[in-house]
Image (cartoon, rainbow, N blue to C red; front, side):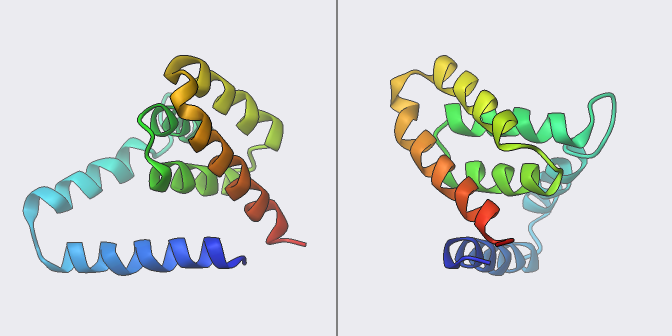
Length: 116
């Protein structure tokens, strides 16, 4: 696994553990709601992750983009599907999304390279 992926996941895991250990009911409920929202339902997990990717890119949340890219990758999403999804996000979000598109592309390449 690349440093970028390892660093992101290690930091996210460490801070999530700290946040949840603080025992704040609202934070715990938000985390639970997020987990349940992305479970399979009328929409499959892959579709939900791609929707999360669009929303994250439009909202310009790089951490969220990385999370949904990795989740999408783990769901077997192809590079073509990711690029089509990100193209819609860029269309909806406008040119201000382009820097996030660049970083998303770079992170996807890292995900693909982790196997090689």
